[in-house]
Image (cartoon, rainbow, N blue to C red):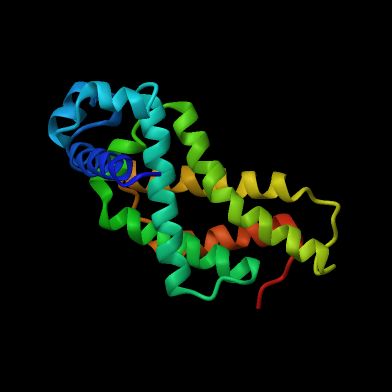
Amino acid sequence: MDIRAQRTRDMLVGAFDQLVEEKNVEEISVSELCGLSTVRRATFYRHFRDMQDFIRFYLTTMTDRFMEALSADNDLEGLIPYARAMHAHMLQYASEHRSRFRHMMGPAMLADTMDLVIIQVADGIVSRIHAMQDASAIDGSVSAETVGLYYSAGLVHAMRWWLLDGQPAEAEGLVESGMAQLTSMLGLRVE
């Protein structure tokens, strides 16, 4: 991607970060996003089909940045260390950016946006389950994709519940609950 295109996308992402701190994602218009970012509407439409296409790009960008930060801070070779670190890091990030998450994952969150988040989270889980199956550390009777999607959907929905309802659950308790669910689905015992 050329430098101008990257700069345009960075400006749009920065403006969207600001807007989603203040309002629900479905309330943000292309005009408002372009006005704050100083990107022309025609330029926006050269890069994205519509706002939903931009939101997909935004979530992918945020997920990539999140995963880079997670990888830099942790040894993520095995499934359990990866899942534990990812889960804790997601909850910490969500807590630090509570307003943004509430506006992104609110009651009117678009289903395909939720699916995108779940799939992004599942990718790392699935690849590590496959590695364990290849190493015969677990049997292959359980579909890695099924476990990855069930775990990821549960994690995303638990985070959403935690953030939106203001539940008193501690982040550490949610992490341990998530680990118990994941290991149970795979028939693992974690010491």
